[in-house]
Amino acid sequence: MSPMWSPPNIGSRPVVLLGAGVLGRRIATVFVAAGYNVRVRDPSQEARDAAIEYIDSHKDEFSRLSKGKRSYGEYSAIADIDTAVKDAWLVIEAVPEKLELKIDTFAEVDQKAPADCIFGSNSSSIKSRLMIEKVSPVRRAQVLNVHFTMPPTILTVELMTDGETNPEIFPFLTKILDDCGMLPVTARKESTGFIFNRLWAAVKREILTILAEGVSEPGEVDKIWDHMFKNGTSPCRLMDQIGLDTVAFVENTYIEERKLDGSLTVDFLRENYIKEGRLGLKSGKGGLYPPAPPSNLPSVYFLDVGLGGNCPDISLVGQNGKIIRRNPDGTTTALLTGLNCPDGIDVSPAEGRMFWTNMGRHTSTHDGSVHSANLDGSDTKTLLAPGEVHTPKQIVVDEANCKLYFCDREGMGVHRIDFDGQNHQILVKTGDMNSPTDKADSTRWCVGITLDTKARKLYWIQKGPSKSGRGRIFRANMVIPSGENASNRSDIETLFEGLPEPVDVEFDSGSNTLYWTDRGEHPTGSSLNKASVGADYIKGSKPEIIARHFHEPIGLKLDTKNGHVYVTDLGGSVYRLGLDGSDKIKIHEDDGCYTGVTLVF
Image (cartoon, rainbow, N blue to C red; front, top):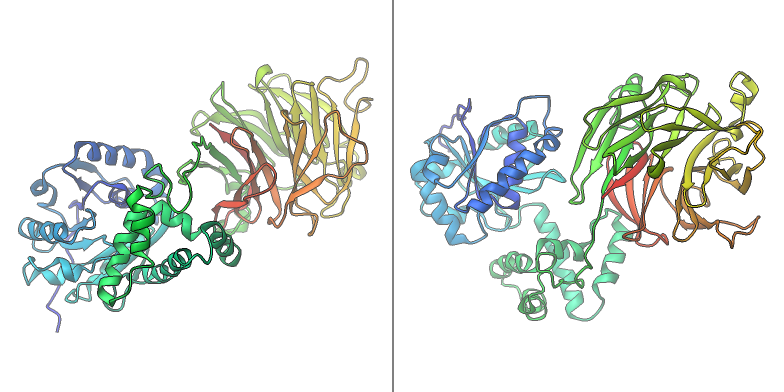
């Protein structure tokens, strides 16, 4: 029978993280963002400073995980373990994966922490049973594994007994972790590797055997994995990310316990990779993959139009739009919320500002608007108030001239304004807004726009009815010919016709190439396309489909520095591809509904 147990009285008592490494600081931020006071203990001043910096810069992002708005908990980082644990209600060790160190750590904390304090180990491979040999018998009922993976990108937390843990602790911690926005699960019995790691261990072990036997190579294994599971996480790259020395250490735990032959797993890694210092991403010498060339990946700014599964009430669509930033490390932050169906976004690096369009509540309502803000979402300004345009769509920055160009769909035109919203001009007018017939004719609707600032040309898309095969792409000068107006200008050239349903467009000045998304029907729609529009352009030529099988793609942005193109779709995904459409990967996915996208370096 388990001894009587009462939950600790939390109050202002802290959660204590022993270890300020990558996971220690992330776990600390989970609790801070949920309103719990936190202390991080680490003997290294550099590690302590890094932990505080991480919490400072990421607590806003983590706060979206917790259930209900709340104030942040207080937090500090200290070197003295006595001070750290003296009034703690929960201590989680995240020290290096060395059993002797964990045994000594728990023994010391047992002597210094309050009697009701719970001890958790974040170890992914060592059972907490093996860590308690120096812990007093009465305390062992309060010790367990509490294994976080990598919040906030992975939310699972696995709980597992030390063989003596009071069973009432599991629902107690489950409720707290769930409140923090984590996904806690409990192993029903002691198990080396818990739940997910046992699944992952089997996959990893077989892959290494395949490589050691020469059956395949890392690139082929990952190709098969990506095709079969389509989850964006390839196993060989994941092991390189974790570090092959860590992979070998964890794998050795299974080998010793199960009396397995390690010649084709751990020994293979040590002989061919670890001995040569090829540990993966952290070594700079590569791992299973060769070292990647230096990259300067941008932050990705993209728009959630508000129509996705994350909208709690369909009547609130006009208040559910967001501007989201994905940082190069994969973390995301919602910079602005409550927007009225945002669609197009671009940035001015010189001004340090972003500009975006709101389509408005409905296609039949004349309530579109254009706005700007600092790149962190502060200092929001309205450039064109709701009603000054109908349904503004893609927007593009002319940095040199401090101008903004955008299309107005039901407004049937191409517009230009200054960065401050002044000097509003209509450059192309494809119909009369006072004519019900014109407004209903979607072949007149202007959606995507891009610029060739060197040649002083603008390109725009008129998409046609949904999935109709009547989309067109046009080109004209950025200046209306003398004596003409937006409705009768003579310099408009039709470049492409009969497209499924083209949407947003980008121009690569280096190759004189247009790229555009098409949300039309498969097989030619739901695609990324390109075509040359330089001196070698031939009227009537067919564009090239370079990538397919998106879920109604909308936004795109070129990164010619790194040879990439970014695409968003209404299915809630953000993709990165090569400029030729190769190496398509999904860098973000949830239940949002994404439109415009831009990049900040």
